[in-house]
Length: 87
Image (cartoon, rainbow, N blue to C red):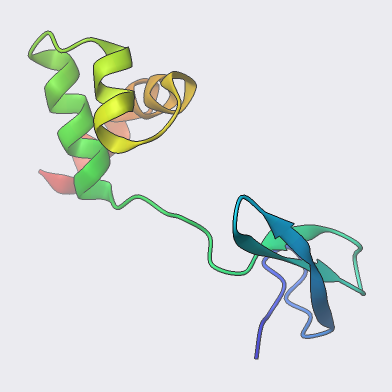
């Protein structure tokens, strides 16, 4: 059973596909979300942060992980929280 990540309702239905990924629509709150969101672990973000600290460019890191450069920048900005959690 699929649950809406926004309101935790179980009243969801299919709502098309985006780049091959099934989209779901919540009948309760009206928001859409992917059926299986792609998430990156804290270890992946830590690796990206270590790559950045070792002078690897943001675009190269983004290409390595398959994300946008903006996502890598967000990971770097939030890096101090990651370092405290992992160390």
